Image 1 (cartoon, rainbow, N blue to C red):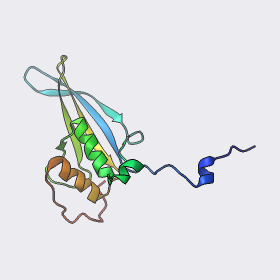
Image 2 (image 1 turned 135 degrees about the vertical axis):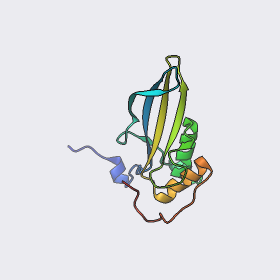
Image 3 (image 1 turned 90 degrees about the vertical axis):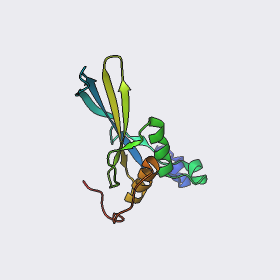
Image 4 (image 1 turned 45 degrees about the horizontal axis):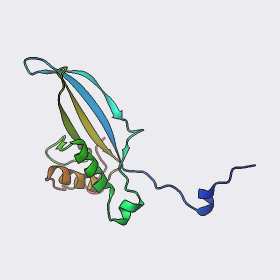
Length: 143
């Protein structure tokens, strides 16, 4: 006998998750002369297992958007530096960690996924306090 699916019977489906943030890390070992040598890099949250920043039904009811959720997450992680001083689609955000007792520094990079260029611009403006929209509306992000 087939299993009864209450969600299908009620016409309910979970919200579609589109907006997310993939997170990478880089660990550098700092020498006495202050120069850093990369030791390790990889994914903390790869694109297939990202941090979801889609607002839930309560957030939407309060007027919050994925942009609000992304900005709050990035600020909470200390990712307040953009990869570029000027906005373009695909800008990512960086948290530069302090040196630990082993003389290593871990930096994390945060990559927006599923955002339109307009949404990315809003995140950029709110994180950096700058940014102009320069003819990118409706154009695909660079590969």
